[in-house]
Length: 254
Image 1 (cartoon, rainbow, N blue to C red):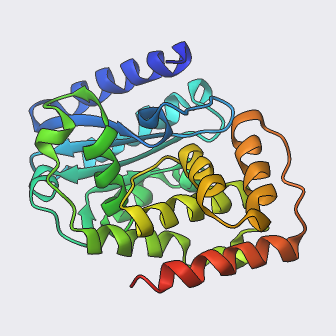
Image 2 (cartoon, rainbow, N blue to C red):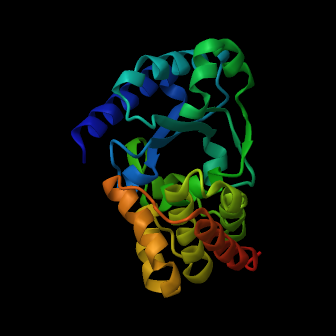
């Protein structure tokens, strides 16, 4: 594991244990760091904090202030984390409630109005079905019981609904974030066809092995961009056609 990543994970574990104390059941890394394809320059650090009961405003504020204090030591894409209750990890519900959430998408607002952010950042998140599934399958435990013991199974229909929620607008989004969209569409198709839970990198490998040769150049460009930082040069109309082809198949699985 990248030493910078390991150092950051150690700091996360220490800070969350100090701030949340006895409320904290466990901390679990998912995403690219759990799959083993993390790149400091191109990945964010995804993790879940599992707690026994609701957080106080003071605890939310302390978590946010700590996150803001370590931004200079995070990868460029930053941290993405959710705080969830233990009961929903053991007995899954969809969409899944969360108590607190942060990602770099909210960074400027957090710096501008941290108290308002803490007060309003709670609700339900369809993406948590996918995060729980990955955590149960390959999650790295920073603190607490093993992920496979704490996280119960996510029903296939809920995991699929979460995947569909994530990719539903990719026909429009693919020209703005081609690497993310191409590799995600491949791994969603892998689940639809085979029930496989894959990383984005593995999704690209799966796509090259299973999708039509006409799309191999697009997939290969995305895979190289993900691992090497090279550009995706496919024309916008080609990207739109690829997304439409994948989404037609995915939507047929509903």
